[in-house]
Image (cartoon, rainbow, N blue to C red):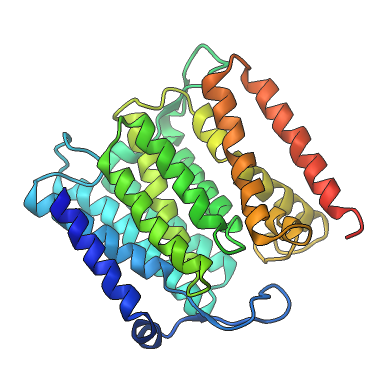
Length: 336
């Protein structure tokens, strides 16, 4: 693993030293519009590309040198199953990249995401969630013939909530670091998650320095990887026993997605079109970037900590979070 680390380290040093050349070559920028995009200068959307190349290096190293595959040291994945996961990662990355460059229509974007996710699920039955286990219900809930559609729905909700949650420097990368850290601990220190933290931390550094944005390409790629990781740990490794854990880990992005979708629908607006009502937009008006991200980190990790390490049940944790979330939103809107 030391060799692999050195390869990644050298690759990222090369990127850092030649960043301006790479920026001009790729030529995909997020341009401020003084409405939704308030950054001061056009910023390259390179986070997804840097992450993709890092992950591909990792995958190739595991497959060809150690005869291992991505998320496990023990599974014997068939070629079709390997292909299905690569199709998912690459297709979602390129959909996001196209959107970063040309701005896909939201309905078309949802269609293409659904098509490639479904294709991956049809090629790999291990990615399909056939049942869920909840801490407050004794029996499993089976989906039978609707399993593939339930899985599609879960992946789409996860990716869209994470995409909605990407709005200020550092926010999205920090959230993915929290998720991969959780997976690293739950999986008994699977090195894949440790490397994922390393990759995202490098992009976080460049993002905080205003050198790049993650973009839809980065969020969609990481969203696909996180989705597969959750399903893998739940379906195969059984390290995640109840899906409540995933629910609480993603509660903040999820609840913000629900609030924004509801508000836009009530106002008759397209639910996929952006605005500045996200929780990070409200917080950044009251606090600095550092304190905004700190508040978001605390809100993100408290529910999962309470669920894993206290005797509080699902309903109490959820209601406490919901109450705090509502009070925080209301406080931010005072004198807004």
